[in-house]
Image 1 (cartoon, rainbow, N blue to C red):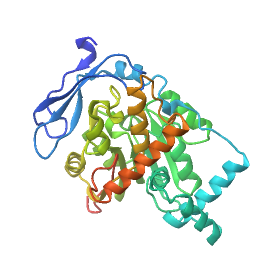
Image 2: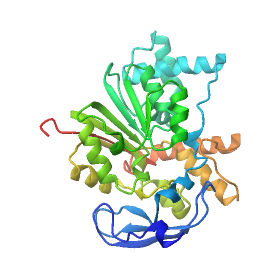
Image 3: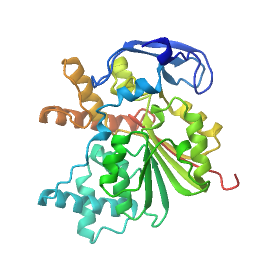
Length: 345
């Protein structure tokens, strides 16, 4: 990368603390982007954020997203097995989140039995971004990709729209009849205090200016509205074990990575009250199989965890992580937070 194509950032983008080299010459785990990148870690306690240095320009990032998994069309299978799965899953959603879609006690019981494995349960909860039934509430998903999560929430009664900066992902979402715009939040210029909920699911790590994004989200939220965020967790067991081979480093797409302290600081400084902060074992199986694939010299594809043996092993690892985070609560792969715009703001 030429000097004109990068931004050298040796000060922490969260607290302006001093950065120290953490990882050197890290490559894209999916093999989609050529090159190698370094990561710096903030030495100012208790921040500890991690960021890509140098950071690629917009044109370089655009190249890195060619063929990204959010371009993929949602699979529209309609066999009896798929219908049965959706029936049981809806029973879980009704029992867990209060949605009026579970028709009977039997459906609810089957739904809860299906999700006895904590990994499957984490996947299902993440699929709704932890949102309970709030009919006719207006929701915005930033970075909605192909619209899989947004479509699910709209089906359950939310008045939802989405946005993404990737034209290919937006095109896929629109094929499903979803209201999705292409551009940045600032460029699209939504009315102030429009939305009850804003979702940013694995988006924060993709922006080099998270403070600006969160301030703009606060502007479009109604007073008392909430932002629901999920992002990779630097304190995750996967990061501790796999270090520079950790899937969630994902250079050059992941620009800034957070731990609970840095994310809390960022949200408080941009005017939010934190309602809940927690971690989950979601996709610990993928982190494990990605590491395994990389050490075997294979290319890992997100959402395609390989052989049956690797899938079973990955789910076992996920179960172990779930047990571990019952004791070490901030060590799960996904760092999740619900924060509120103060009513008096």
